[in-house]
Length: 320
Image 1 (cartoon, rainbow, N blue to C red):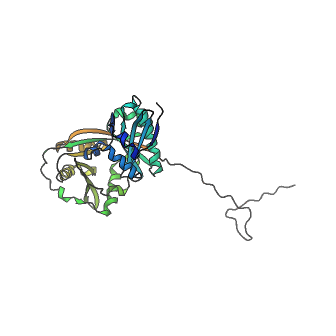
Image 2 (image 1 turned 45 degrees about the vertical axis):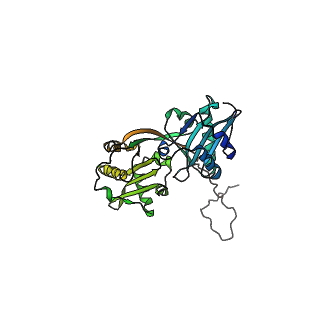
Image 3 (image 1 turned 120 degrees about the horizontal axis):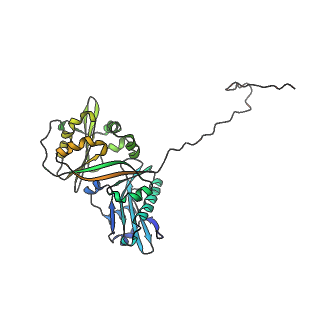
């Protein structure tokens, strides 16, 4: 790889970034379906809000070669890679440049308190630089698209209620009960992750005093995204719950399903959802548990007069 210099983006890089890259890899394609990608706007955000956005650029002798963008994820202590780009002058060194940028992004995120770095990769042909940079797959996600007529309403749908501030822990318990442990460890979710963000609406379905389902709808300028947490014992409620989510907006609506939610795939197809894309979820741990030996205080040889030892001692006398 040619000699490169990696540094954060600044206002002086606007001219170089105004030239469209030859290759752009937009990660987390589901989010990109809702919000357009504005490279120059992201440069300004990285300069004005460096704590929230990290944009790194790789320069060579001929100018700008590649870039990588990351920002905090909804899970605390987690950052997410959102975009990689390469310009024509990078030649055949795109993957080595991206590998170097991903490694540096991990260092930047770590300095800002992140414990892990996530990436949602839509194209497996670009998996190599992520693996070389220390990312490992932990789940597969299926994106389905709905743009047809709304199915007949089901009477169970109105039983949902909007989430309240005190419900976050109940939703988190549902998440822990239906999500594989490897996924939980990789995502690092905590109860605050289930509080609605801008553009989101969350509904709960309670039964027997427990949260049995949580439906989230994230609306944007280009459509909406649904995702569903559902107790497997009430799978029969899935059509009504998804129908309820479809009834709160217009098409297109996208549904996110994990591979371990395969039982919902046929339900979604019956409602008119069609497969749209697949994504591989990757994680790079930036912090690992480390056992640090703690010194044990040595026994005090001299004690105040009258003090009793904490453990009995044996005195050995040698006969001369």
